[in-house]
Length: 119
Image 1 (spheres, rainbow, N blue to C red):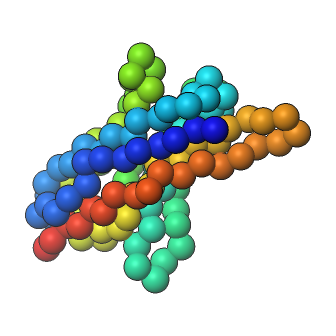
Image 2 (image 1 turned 90 degrees about the vertical axis):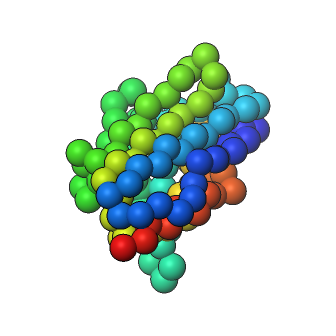
Protein backbone atom coordinates (compact mmCIF):
# COMPACT_ATOMS: atom_id res chain seq x y z
CA UNK A 1 0.00 0.00 0.00
CA UNK A 2 1.16 3.48 -0.89
CA UNK A 3 -0.43 6.73 0.22
CA UNK A 4 0.07 9.97 -1.69
CA UNK A 5 -0.77 13.40 -0.31
CA UNK A 6 -0.53 16.49 -2.51
CA UNK A 7 -0.31 20.11 -1.47
CA UNK A 8 0.57 23.46 -2.96
CA UNK A 9 -2.29 24.20 -5.31
CA UNK A 10 -4.09 27.51 -5.40
CA UNK A 11 -5.11 30.54 -7.42
CA UNK A 12 -2.45 32.43 -9.34
CA UNK A 13 -2.39 35.00 -12.11
CA UNK A 14 -1.12 34.13 -15.56
CA UNK A 15 2.66 34.28 -15.62
CA UNK A 16 2.92 33.32 -11.98
CA UNK A 17 4.40 30.26 -10.31
CA UNK A 18 3.34 27.49 -7.97
CA UNK A 19 5.12 24.51 -6.50
CA UNK A 20 3.21 21.31 -5.86
CA UNK A 21 4.39 18.70 -3.39
CA UNK A 22 3.50 15.03 -3.12
CA UNK A 23 4.50 13.08 -0.04
CA UNK A 24 4.51 9.31 -0.40
CA UNK A 25 4.17 6.95 2.54
CA UNK A 26 3.72 3.23 3.07
CA UNK A 27 5.56 0.78 0.84
CA UNK A 28 7.51 3.46 -0.98
CA UNK A 29 10.32 1.02 -1.78
CA UNK A 30 7.96 -0.66 -4.26
CA UNK A 31 7.33 2.48 -6.32
CA UNK A 32 8.51 2.05 -9.92
CA UNK A 33 7.48 5.40 -11.34
CA UNK A 34 6.03 8.55 -9.80
CA UNK A 35 4.82 11.84 -11.11
CA UNK A 36 1.97 14.21 -11.87
CA UNK A 37 -1.19 14.09 -13.94
CA UNK A 38 -3.85 16.73 -14.39
CA UNK A 39 -7.49 16.83 -15.37
CA UNK A 40 -9.32 19.90 -16.55
CA UNK A 41 -13.13 20.07 -16.58
CA UNK A 42 -14.55 18.08 -19.46
CA UNK A 43 -11.15 16.70 -20.46
CA UNK A 44 -9.31 13.46 -19.97
CA UNK A 45 -6.63 13.10 -17.36
CA UNK A 46 -3.20 13.65 -18.88
CA UNK A 47 0.36 13.02 -17.85
CA UNK A 48 2.16 16.24 -16.97
CA UNK A 49 5.54 15.04 -15.77
CA UNK A 50 6.96 11.95 -14.20
CA UNK A 51 10.02 9.95 -13.28
CA UNK A 52 10.04 6.66 -15.15
CA UNK A 53 11.11 3.39 -13.59
CA UNK A 54 14.56 3.99 -15.05
CA UNK A 55 14.79 7.41 -13.45
CA UNK A 56 14.37 9.49 -16.60
CA UNK A 57 11.90 12.36 -16.71
CA UNK A 58 9.09 12.88 -19.18
CA UNK A 59 7.01 15.99 -19.75
CA UNK A 60 3.84 16.92 -21.55
CA UNK A 61 4.88 18.94 -24.59
CA UNK A 62 2.87 21.98 -23.56
CA UNK A 63 4.69 22.30 -20.22
CA UNK A 64 8.26 21.71 -21.39
CA UNK A 65 10.48 24.59 -20.41
CA UNK A 66 7.96 25.85 -17.85
CA UNK A 67 7.47 22.95 -15.43
CA UNK A 68 10.16 20.99 -13.61
CA UNK A 69 9.71 17.76 -11.70
CA UNK A 70 12.12 16.95 -8.90
CA UNK A 71 12.28 14.70 -5.87
CA UNK A 72 13.78 14.42 -2.44
CA UNK A 73 14.21 10.71 -1.79
CA UNK A 74 15.07 11.26 1.88
CA UNK A 75 11.67 12.90 2.35
CA UNK A 76 9.78 10.60 -0.06
CA UNK A 77 8.56 13.74 -1.75
CA UNK A 78 8.09 14.67 -5.39
CA UNK A 79 7.74 18.28 -6.47
CA UNK A 80 6.35 20.01 -9.51
CA UNK A 81 7.65 23.54 -9.99
CA UNK A 82 5.32 25.36 -12.35
CA UNK A 83 6.48 28.66 -13.84
CA UNK A 84 4.98 30.95 -16.45
CA UNK A 85 1.56 29.52 -15.74
CA UNK A 86 -1.18 29.92 -18.31
CA UNK A 87 -4.96 29.79 -17.96
CA UNK A 88 -4.92 26.50 -19.86
CA UNK A 89 -2.89 24.98 -17.02
CA UNK A 90 -6.00 25.23 -14.84
CA UNK A 91 -6.87 21.73 -13.64
CA UNK A 92 -6.87 19.37 -10.71
CA UNK A 93 -3.36 18.01 -10.37
CA UNK A 94 -2.93 14.46 -9.13
CA UNK A 95 0.13 12.69 -7.85
CA UNK A 96 0.46 9.19 -9.27
CA UNK A 97 2.65 6.24 -8.35
CA UNK A 98 3.12 2.99 -10.19
CA UNK A 99 3.85 0.18 -7.78
CA UNK A 100 5.21 -3.22 -8.63
CA UNK A 101 3.44 -6.14 -7.01
CA UNK A 102 3.60 -9.89 -7.50
CA UNK A 103 1.98 -10.57 -10.83
CA UNK A 104 1.60 -7.02 -12.02
CA UNK A 105 1.43 -3.33 -11.35
CA UNK A 106 -0.89 -1.20 -9.24
CA UNK A 107 -1.67 2.47 -9.72
CA UNK A 108 -2.02 4.77 -6.74
CA UNK A 109 -3.44 8.29 -6.81
CA UNK A 110 -3.49 11.21 -4.44
CA UNK A 111 -6.65 13.15 -3.71
CA UNK A 112 -5.74 15.96 -6.10
CA UNK A 113 -5.00 19.63 -5.64
CA UNK A 114 -6.71 22.42 -7.58
CA UNK A 115 -4.62 24.81 -9.64
CA UNK A 116 -6.44 27.81 -11.07
CA UNK A 117 -4.69 30.31 -13.33
CA UNK A 118 -6.54 33.54 -13.98
CA UNK A 119 -5.98 35.63 -17.09
